[in-house]
Length: 196
Image 1 (cartoon, one colour):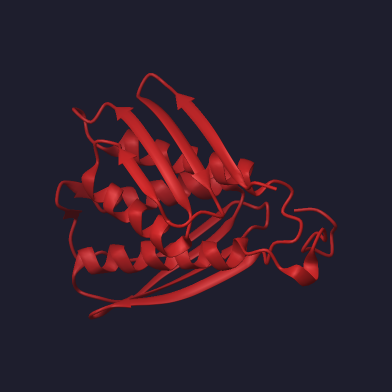
Image 2 (cartoon, helix red, strand yellow):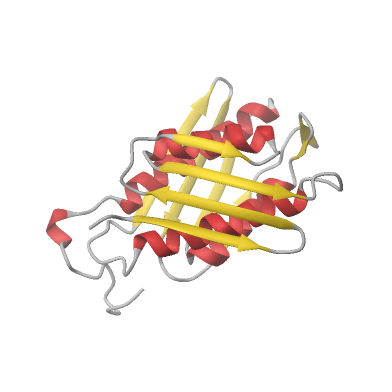
């Protein structure tokens, strides 16, 4: 069964289309108007082995807030649609990723319970033109609509670019682990409750 989805979300602030394939090869195509976010989304695709095609037309003349948050929301919706009933998946994923002096840890649970616990003190207020506060908005939008519990910790780092990149690489790796199909759990819900 193909674990892929396309989701469109249109508001007065953004018009977004996302196509994902959870069993891809890391192919990525972006047109969002937010270059550094695209660099981070590429880390999710490459390290998660998830094909991503994301377009966004947003009100970037105001700032990038609506585009970044709404991409997170729409990406979460696409993941929820593509993963389906969650039977047979590992469910939990984690990863530690370094980049030079920076080190981050991401842990995810496809629990059906949205929760973001993000402990990151960026050393700069912006990376290029992107406000580092918007990473929280991106992940909050994602967890609310994917229905996941997500813990993000930047353990160390003084270069803000490195901090962000380790977070997104670890996020991609954690997704890859959690979404892997476990042959011993084929057709089985990975929960004692019988649902997620």
